[in-house]
Image 1: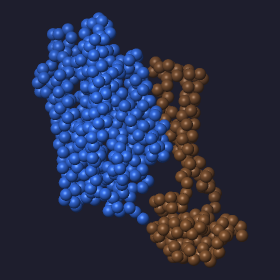
Image 2: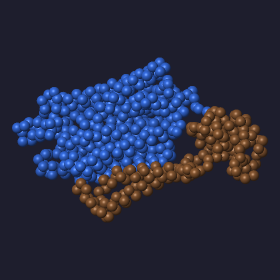
Image 3: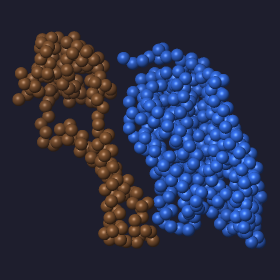
Image 4: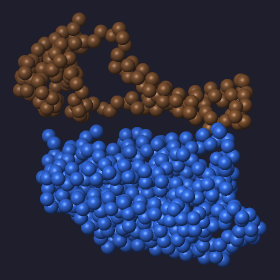
Amino acid sequence: MERDTHFVTGVYEDEDVLLQAITQVRSSGIKIHEVYSPYPVHGIDDYLGYKRSKLPIAAFLFGLLGTTLALTMQFYMMKFDWPMIIGGKDYGAFPDFIPVTFELTVLLASFGMVGVFMVSTNLKPWAQPRIFDLRITDDKHVMAIDIANNSAMELAKIEEILKSSGASEVNKKSFE
Amino acid sequence: MAHHVQHFNLDQKFDFTDAIKKIVFTVLGIGAALLVIGILMAVFGGGHHEAAEAEGHAFHWYERLYANLWINNVYFTGIAIIGVFFFAIQYAAQAGWSTAIIRVMLSLGNWLPIAGILMIVTFFIANHDLFHWTHAYLFDKSSPEYDSIIDGKGSFFYWPMAKGTFPIFYIFRMVLFFGFWVFFFKKFQQFTYNEDIIGGTYSWYKIRSWSAFFLIFFAVSSSIAAWDWVMSIDTHWFSTLFGWYVFSSWFVAGLSAITLITIFLKSQGLLEMVNENHVHDLGKFIFGFTIFWTYLWFSQFLLIYYANIPEETVYFIERLSSDIYGPFIFVNLGLNFVLPFLLLMTRDSKRHGVFLKLVCALIIAGHWVDFFLMVQPGTLGHNGGVGFMEVGMFLVYGAAFTFVVLSGLAKGNLVPKNHPMLEESYNHHI
């Protein structure tokens, strides 16, 4: 069986039940593909054992790029390309450049972070999201388990564990 | 899933043991020794005398002592009142995360009565040596030293009495501010410790109301205190954001003090309900308000630099072009902005490890430098600097402050055990 095509989904009604279920399912040796919720569930990434996002590093590097770009641009323009005296200051009047530097640092850090986030989570406008269950946009939490990734365990056993962990329904879902 | 209140020992008290007292007194002793060395050097060194006399104003060693007293009076008053302020903010904002450490915040206020007395006594001993505007001849039109600018500002100090006599309005404000600050501090203390006995939500609602009044009063008084105690040293000069600038400096230093005491109490095996999530939040406050301080420092600097009006630029020229103070401008920015900004940027550095402790210590030293730069150039000019006297006086005040605060903390229960939001604080998770 191919990976990333056939899934078992457990539907949960309540967030606390879901969090308990995640612990139970993971401790029984099943690898969870993903959990979908209608709203952010506090602390769920710890339960799923996710590593912390590396997004802040991207933000820092983009911020640094913004700082460098802003200072280089202003010094080049104001000191070398078209020197101008403004307010009786030096050509390279460093304090004058700080507000623009600040703004570009913030701008590039935030835009860069959003860009990296979109690329890393495949949030391009033409992306075709895979909907495991339509009710995740309404009132249900859904845990998706990739059957091929858990081939060591029988399908019936996985369904059994999901049921016993508090899932109100256990369904199957396949994608082309 | 969550921890429950009963899992923690709520009747814990901080024990101010002899071992801890010994450390505090050792620091006090070192500070006093350095201070004496500094005074002796100033009395017998006298390298600056000739230069000073050439200007027509003889410099005396005790002027430097007074300036040091004033720097530390203002600085430690600020840290103390920030403890009360931050406590009041928790109630006004109905914050739950901080409940386990609110008494640490409030304990800083124990210094306030002593600070008030020190401030008033220092003012009366040192007035001419610290504050140029206390000279009567500035307001006398027949005097050659008549100063029309200071005369214009005279009522701010002397009203309703004649200018150049007794600064009744100034003293009134000083007494009023300390009086109300101590009053509010005592009120908060009374209600929060009474809560341990009576329970319920009565105390919480009471403190919330008093907090709202305190915050209004503090918003005005902190600003005016900054003009009175610090900005009036450079009498001709003024800056419209000076009150916030001084407040932000106090705030960062006060937050660092709260964090250091919290970490210290944890290392004593107390406050076990305070975990890395609470420390993380304190770290974020320090990180954020470090940037706020920098923003105000730079806003003040940039506008003065850019507008280039002589009356305003004199403040920075006095500091930047001085061999004594010039380097400290950069020390100030390095300790209070660059290092905290870079060291506290990552999540881990705010949650555990030595970084937060290191940064808090750097900030407490750094904001002392900030006040040093506000006070000394205007009072001592080229006779100032950081020497034995400065370091000694800072250590003496620091040790005395620590002693008073820890003694106050040891008197009552460390955790507000009947606080309605205690459980929320335990479950704080970020």
